Length: 237
Image (cartoon, rainbow, N blue to C red; front, side, top):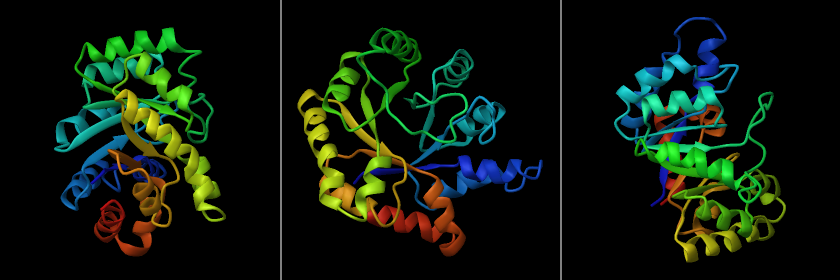
C-alpha cells in the first residue's frame, strides 16, 4: 500500500488569510496523523503565502510519521531544510512567482546543480526525491544525480484522465518501468483526487507515496477531515 502524505499548505493559507492562528496548523497536522495519514508534506514558498518558514521547526518536532519538505532549493530553502532535517526533501523547480508546481526538473540539464544540492541533503541524512515529468530520460537523470526517489508530476495525467484514462497513464507506466529497472523509488503528486487516484495506483503498483493537499482539503469541506483521509487511504489499497 502506498503511503498518503497530506500537504497542509492550504490549511496554512486559510490560517494566514485572517492573520491569526485559526485554524491551528499544528493541531491539523497532528489530527491528520491521528486520522490515518502516513506523512505530512509542506511547501514553504519564498513569499510564505502558505506554510511559513517559522512553521517548520514546530511541525518537525510534532510530526510522528514522515515529514516531507518540498520546494525549489534556493539558499533560504536549503538552510531551512538542513537546519530541520526532515525525513524527505522533494526538490521542485518552481519559479518564484509560480501559482503552483507545473513542471518537473530537467535532470540532465541541471545535473551538476542537483548533484551538489543532493550531496548537501545527504550530509544530514535526508532522503531526496526529485519532481519530474513522466519522461524516461528524466527518471534516469534523477538516479544519476543520486536521488533515492522521483515524484511524478501528475498534473497532465489528471487533466487527461476524464477523457482517456489509458492514454493519460501510458507515459507514467513507461517511466515507472525505467524507475523499477534502475532501482529508484516512485512518489507522485499534483491534482490527484478521489476520482483519479485509485486508477493511478492500480496501474503503478510500485507507487510508494502520494502527496495530496488541495483536493483533499476541498473534499474535507464536504466529508470532514477524518472521513476524507480514510477515503483517500481506501483509494490506495
